[in-house]
Length: 238
Image (cartoon, rainbow, N blue to C red; front, side, top):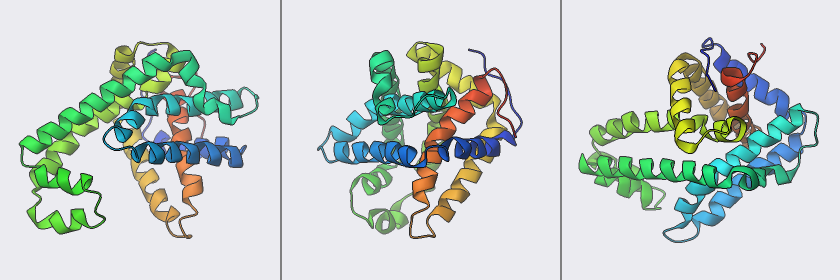
């Protein structure tokens, strides 16, 4: 699949289009999104391996959201079962994507540790609610900057990968490479998208956090609207 470059303003349109999909089945989309969060929370309770397991299956769960979006656009009924549909069709490939992403994260964590980020990693992984604040005076900006620089290309490679595996039948490695190329070609749109999503998430905290019931599904669905715009037959409309 060949990505195209879209205008920077499309970053906002991805979110707007995601809301159009969301409002057609508000309750189901909320249930699907909350289900992913609950799965992550439950696996996170498993000592040592829980968070790793979630990283492995996260691409398949994301792909399930994408399959649900495609089904709804075709006029089919959106179902909770869509969340797990990708496990049946592309389970091995998607778990491989998760494994590559997890490996990348571990390598980045190791590099951050080598450049003096032990305190940062300890603060993040300690589980103490004030750990990051207490450690702030001892945390250098160098490992933070190094971590961000290394994490960005990994996120770019991951972003479209689940969709490319499910809808493009690409291998995990090809999906990651194609996703990186597509993200690189659309830095402007992703910048607008990221800033807009960040501001909306801040607004979502105001009404007793209830805004997250809208924002979390929008964030998931926008994976699909971005994919359709960059890889689809026609751009997402204004």
